[in-house]
Length: 581
Image (cartoon, rainbow, N blue to C red; front, top):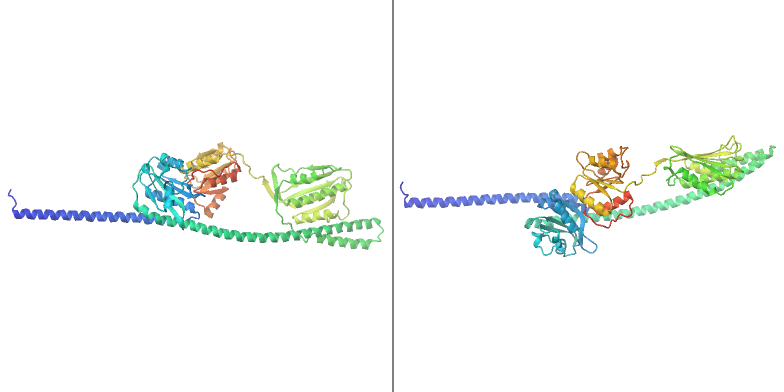
């Protein structure tokens, strides 16, 4: 093989250098294209992140709920294990808001972070939250074991954390914190985006303050309207009192006129027939005036037990010389009905008083009878009675009796007076009364059942219920919840709405048809839902749920809801615990 000439060697070297330059240039172009593609992808993710935050802020009616949702989105975006929201206390220290979110694979790490944070108070510039609040800047700690200002590293022994403040005006209204179990280099682009995200989240607080102001204005207007309503009610009460005074005076005139009629009729010589007829015409007009032209009493109806109402009136005459026999209505012991109690008691009192005055030495019987739409009170004296010809047309045994007739008519009923074959008089008062059914549900148990298919939610909510002081059982779905309610008596059930297989509404409808469970069929079932629109509330109530608790919730909301349905005065809503997501 011949050696290349000097000229050939020079040409070969030149071609090799040229090929090397072209290869280097190609690598540079590919690297530039790859970097541009990476930056384009990162910018696309950042745009999606900012758009998601904007949607959260615009759709939320609660600023803290918006922060919780935004923290969850940011945690996933930067691939951190735990997110947390802190808020300022009265003294300016930043404390937990009970709003947490975590990677489902990092629940043990979540427990460590919660235990290290729940009792901490970060007064600026103490700790990462306090330092962020003091500086108004986003900060990143790439290695917590080497951080100088991180008081929780006795429990959180390593990892990374970053945080940024949410500011409205010049005030830091919240701090969003993110923690990971392994060290992480600072993401400069994330730190640059944090102020824009914080500005969007700050609008949620501004809008909430605006809504609060609108609510306050609306409340003032409602108070003014309520005051006007009270003024109108006062005028109506004065009018009603005047009507009652007029009716009482007219009833007295009726009584006096009929006494005169009886005296004139007793002569039986016919000489006073014209006078008697004239007096009877006057009495008829007076009774019509006393009736008040068919007016109805519109006072408040209350749930009352008929037997108890009758007994309370009869007890006033317990020391009298004439015995009174009270016959029970036969209704169940806890039966109640809707009554305008003062008027009903006044009717019964007048009938009993009138019967006693005509009973002589005999006795008086009082009986209450409950109907589907009315209540009937029978009062009978076994003495001489107080009836005469024509008495069945109107109650005309005395002034008070006329008032009883007017009240019965005003209450949608009537009063009849009839002579009895065995002697004496039967006064029967009937008033309209809507059946109220059995007495309201009463607590049978102080044990609580928590139903949620999300393990993080169950852990956090169970921790709060434990701090409140309630014995709680926790299940992960509708089927185990129904089985638990069949075997264990619960006084309150917290039911997640969105669950696989059978959702919370279907489970509630199923339980309302159960007849043999240990838990009462009408146990209060409270919906746990992230959707708090009117449609969702209506669907929950139609399914048989009595109330709802919006996710995420804290220990104060949980304690208030538990007290509402369990009526436990010892619930301490001032204690703190992590909140459910």
